[in-house]
Image 1 (tube, helix red, strand yellow):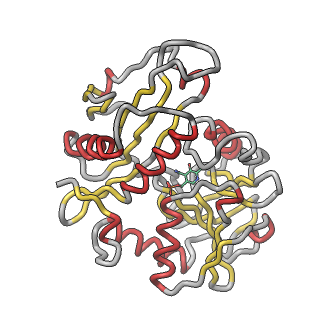
Image 2 (cartoon, helix red, strand yellow; image 1 turned 60 degrees about the vertical axis):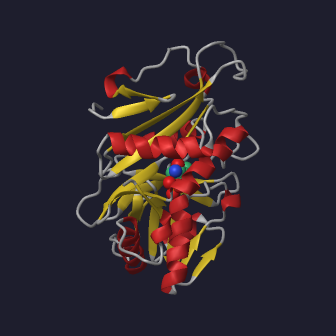
Length: 304
Ligand code: PMP
């Protein structure tokens, strides 16, 4: 990946190609790193960051779980993110703030090391590519989703993504797009970096966060939009066979946005294309993030 944009590193803007850290950075060796994924969309009133407050709150909570003492307040982080979008004069982008234990002392204990923070951004339009209006082709991963007895799964932490990466590799090596992960009880949790929803008999269903799913900001946005549109929804566990028999299955996340699944383990879901409810939610989500909804206007932080 190459890019001309500037990256904020501990209070200073550096050129993309100079955004470097030491090879003995603690977070690289022991995954003592947390991060966020945020999107900024162009609107009639210029670029706007979607649900910035919620992302900052989750980042702070992730840091807390890893005993990280940040050198920046919530307000300073918020301002740094806005400034990074501003200085790069970018309209649509994906923003990646990251906090990690840095270089200093090796060994499992991260605490002697300083916690560093960076904010990078890039265009990320084709997050998961599909052909035409066909849904994604996915497998149910043979890797179980990590369990809250092993790692704090509600922290958006790098450590969790080794589990996700293995599942994604499994899907890619099978010639498919993405993997769905089950928890230790065999119930559906989420995609490798997205929450999951199904529709059955006009009822929208998503697993509870106690299943092990990340408390996704897109997930919560979808539930609010569904409520606003009068779509019936329920939060309850989903078994793998309920997935295969669903009328619609889709994934939702900041990077992926709302993406339908057309095939799971070679079983075609309905006609394999984006369903009626997913399509309705996609349209509304699109309008909201681009500043065309009065009702959800307070989800946007305008840059100018
Ligand atoms: N689950 C996992 C494992 C994720 O990595 C993500 C992406 N952050 C999500 C769900 C969706 O969360 P959000 O909508 O907040 O991006």
